[in-house]
Length: 338
Image 1 (cartoon, rainbow, N blue to C red):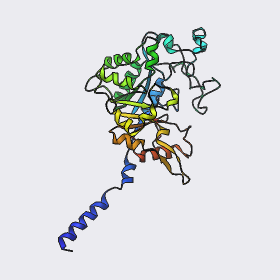
Image 2 (image 1 turned 90 degrees about the vertical axis):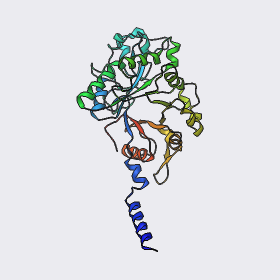
Image 3 (image 1 turned 180 degrees about the vertical axis):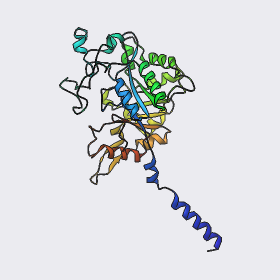
Image 4 (image 1 turned 90 degrees about the horizontal axis):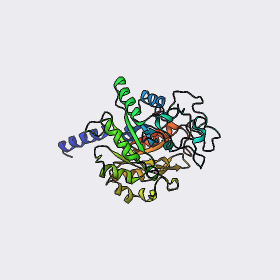
């Protein structure tokens, strides 16, 4: 071999040896940490305490689920019903509907603020859904408006010199429409009031929905082309919307989402299908297919006290998903990063 060829070959070999392996690159990949309803693993979900704690834990984003009050105020609640997360039955016992449930949309925002938010209970009201979580009550655990949470996070960013973003889900748009309310329009109005519809919003932001028509409307009617939109994908049995989520999960279905979405929110069982006999994770191809379609992948919901079958620890789950290349993780425990 000529001397010049030997020299070039040696340099190439040294360069290749210096490059990180594919697995090393995967290990360096750090997905976004999205505080699911705030730091909801420690204090009641969506409260100011959950927001402040998630911010102090340096989450990248804090999630807000949004429904409407009777006077059209967007409030931060996961459910359209109040039963599981408040003391509404003791404060307003006569205000339940014929089905025995209490709905946020039947109360003014001032009335909602009279309620105390508690840890989520079982649907049967038999006890806490996660019994090892916060046990006490506190009069300052109250329902917040979307505007209040946006303002709180903005000011925390200033005082802590951070840029924690907001991650807003527009909940049950079709149900609200049946009640003659427009939750999508109400959310856009608050975003406009807080300067989120400018080229430089006050904090980073994502908008998400299980209903593709909500996201299409945000682009088509409200021209929100500057805000990244996330199509949440559910299990069909959850009845989140009339769409076929199984079809949406196919390679062709994911490709079709590019017309209106920047990414997808995937249920963890869409991604991690199980663990084999050698205790190795078995992944579906959905993350690979979503990335091939140019979509970001954010996975929900990671809980230290509710691990998928076969997973030995929360830290192991984080590491597996990180190495698999997901772009973001919704977690109740934003302080734990693997």
